[in-house]
Length: 134
Image 1: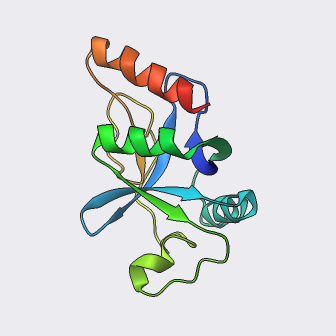
Image 2: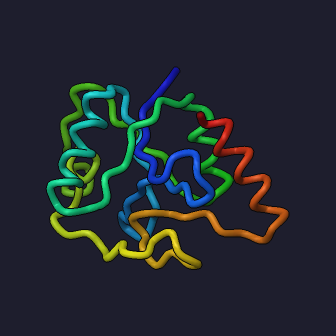
């Protein structure tokens, strides 16, 4: 099954995946429908947040990436209806975002965007994992 995720600098060394901090967990959204992912991107852009690209990837690859990174993958199915304030964040970004200027510099200080920076050996492994997502 394929899902849609939000990526920044797709295909570059500074590639990052959009994530949220919900109850001290880093959550990566996986949208069932591209239209929902596109809408989420539009809402981010309306808040002057950097605009990600929507990428179609295999659901199991994202889940594996999240497991290896200590993140939580959240599937947003078609017609999703939030049942809590936290669920609302799965279909609409928070009203305020953390500062992401310079997110792709040496260290990422924003929990909304995770930039993978590891030792040189780990970077190769992570790069292969991300390339497999595409």
